[in-house]
Length: 87
Image 1: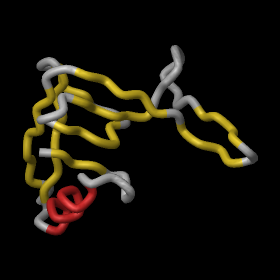
Image 2: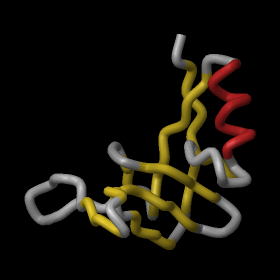
Image 3: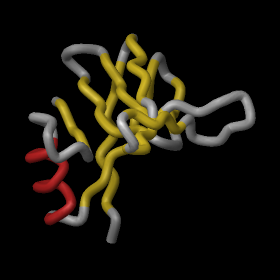
């Protein structure tokens, strides 16, 4: 399954559907729980996209053509989505 908070990603429909049901997902990568900044997780592809942080733990922001953007990084490995009820 693929879930994404990025509206331009194919996994966004699943994310939106889950939110409407009061569900969210915990994401594990190689049996380690990722607790912050996950944007997209795909179990079949074995990929997690998250916002990149610097050594100080703060988000890395880049300015391109006057637009500020938070950098992203793709991590690969064994991805597991764990459904959790928000209510």
